[in-house]
Image (cartoon, rainbow, N blue to C red; front, side, top):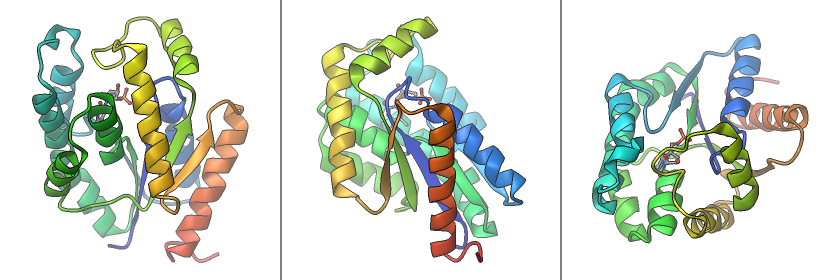
Length: 213
Ligand code: TMP
């Protein structure tokens, strides 16, 4: 595939979605075809699954079902949006991907990591991001930022220990994938993060031969 697949990860409140939008705008201004999507969601089917997953009404949902619904939304996103865009040579920027399932359902809920990987391998047909930005913000800081935003969804309202395990999970992933995953200090200013993310993306695009100079 000719395009490049970029994902952004990190805790809720880390500013990843704002930075994703800034990156998309900067790449588009430079003339690239950029496709933005998110998980759960990104498609009509995925957005319906998202509502089920995040509704605080569904507090009886089992960890197994939660994991399958995230994977189901992802499968639809990969087939309908991500693979076709990559085949056209577009840059795809996705807000969360398989790493989130490993961190939240694996480390957070304690679900078996091998099973999560196997399910996701099947759901995505083995698609892996080329580059992942991990927005690093401590669970305490993330929780303070989320409190300012008002109502929390079903996952956000889990306790501090859950969010600490998710944080540790992302740090483990960072250690395991030093080439693919880039740590971004979410405490820096919006402008400096924006520049860092854009520069790294351009460098990777050059390395992959997606752009020339
Ligand atoms: P968002 O707020 O970044 O859109 O993500 C929605 C919530 O879903 C967020 O709390 C993280 C959670 N999540 C998982 O638990 N597992 C996953 O695989 C994904 C993609 C998200």
